[in-house]
Length: 65
Image (tube, rainbow, N blue to C red):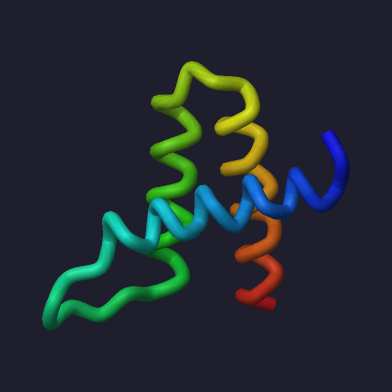
């Protein structure tokens, strides 16, 4: 898998999680996204999804610092 493909997978999984979290009048925090990615990764049976979630968590965690 190329780096471009891996990044696209990471962005896709982040988009999926954000879309699930969006509510009409609710706030969305970075921590909510990270927690949801972690839960999604734990429940997934697909190794590529798990890896994409873990990489997305690393990418977003850098935003905290």
